[in-house]
Image (cartoon, rainbow, N blue to C red; front, side):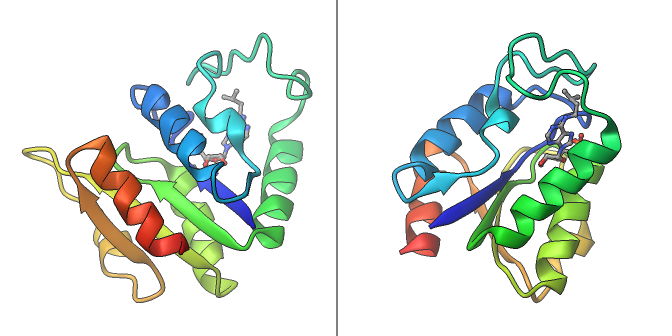
Length: 143
Ligand code: 6IA
C-alpha cells in the first residue's frame, strides 16, 4: 500500500516530531511516500540541509512531484491540527480524485477545524487526544 502523509510545512513546524511518529506508524502498513514531512531539518523557513534531492528544487517541482505521489497513492492520511494551505489543497485534490482520506485533528481548547475539512463528505475526520488514540484511528481506517 502506498500512503500519502500530509502535514504542515510552511504552515508551521511545531508538530513535526508528531508527524515523524505518525509516519513511523504508517510505515507498518506500507510505503509512506512523503517521509520528509516529518523530518526535523525541514523548517517552515525552507531549510532542508540534509534531505536528499530537495536542495535546489523549485516550488513548481515540489508541487508537481507531490501531486504525482498523491495520484499514485492508495490512501491519504493528513494531520490537520496546524492549519496549512498546502495540506488543504492536497485534501481537496484527494477528494476530487476519489481517494480514501483520513484527517486527524488534535483536540485543543480554543481551536476548531475548518468547516471545509470538517464538513467535507469526502473526508474521514477523526479527533484525538493522545498519540495512541491517533494510531487507533489510523488502524481502523487502513485495515
Ligand atoms: O502550505 P504548507 O507548506 O504547510 O504545505 C504542506 C504540504 O504541502 C505537505 O503535506 C507537503 O506534502 C506539501 N509540501 C509543501 N512544501 C513541500 C516541500 N518543500 N517538500 C515536499 N512537500 C511539500 C518545500 C520547501 C520546504 C523545505 C519549506
